[in-house]
Length: 136
Length: 79
Image 1 (cartoon, rainbow over the protein chains, first blue to last red):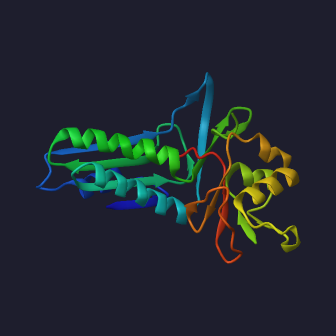
Image 2: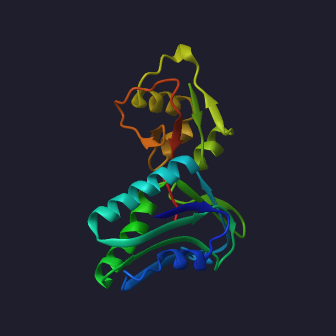
């Protein structure tokens, strides 16, 4: 398992990690910065992590995926710092013998990461900024 | 006990760390949340607030030990 918090996402590193002669399927999800939200233009996102806890929670998510599906390799990488529209900020990926497990586990990883891993993003608009999800 | 602060809770308190005075006699997660809500009313308006103890999510009736690493976890928004 490759679990990391980094300044810059390296797509090639993630793909290289997942490759294996035992695998017949590789799935990679890449989350990127969108330039708009709810009709407002987004100029950048700042990501902040509680790094020690985030790594531990990412490990829990990875362990849960490995318990549910027969996976060959697994990767979870999240970026922190200031990110511009279009930039990658998170990767989840798995390789497995067959594609069903690969598709399902990859989605599980990103869904659980978004639910439990202590990472926060602040959206910057042309006139102000806001912590995402902070208020109901 | 000392709290680590992130995201909007750091903005609300205005610091990265917050010392909770011993005389407040706070022993549980629920007690800590109630004290925080009184000290910083803006915290009550958050969509949720979790407390982490040594990198794991804690439950409201969990006991807090001063030697543990304790952090406030406002609504997460990674990904």
